[in-house]
Length: 260
Image 1 (cartoon, rainbow, N blue to C red):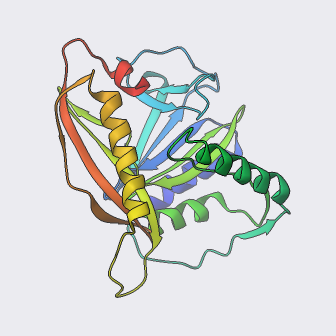
Image 2: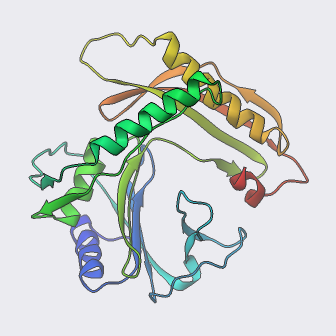
């Protein structure tokens, strides 16, 4: 069902306040924002890849993905106009992070690199912040405005929590037996009128990601084609991107490909 944008966001706010499971998302470079409201708050983890719906999967593959099936949901959509309104005043109060632990982790990673145990590592840490005057709708609308070329989403389940973000990365796109994905790596700030120049380090990082994806997929995808790397802008950042395409082999499946 198509709603005007005001009614659309009012419905999302009501679902959040009433603790109803939902997901709202806009695909890259599209004007339509989609919302899926689950009719119950059960946590569904048993599904197969022949079903239609929205999958929310944790980074930890030992944990189960949560599925919102279309058959147990209400669907709504609306047209979103990007007016570049940057007046969101959401306040974030930062807490002190565990700096010592992070530094030790970096030192450990450097030692493993010196021992040639791996070629690339990304060190990350979690930072907890307190939100003051948090407004779900305004925060999500700000993401929509700032990242028109990203997948912008807000996922909520009262028994699990709220997850919101914008990503330019595509895990895969499949139409009939045609498959495509991307390798995205290398990062630098986008500055006005400044030519994008990539260092050898960043180009190597990109190639490592591309090689890994191709190596993982070659048993599932036939006739793989790999584009030359090119620069792509996502919000205020530049990345290096490579397009990878092919045809799904007869012995493969969506589940196998996603696991790869």
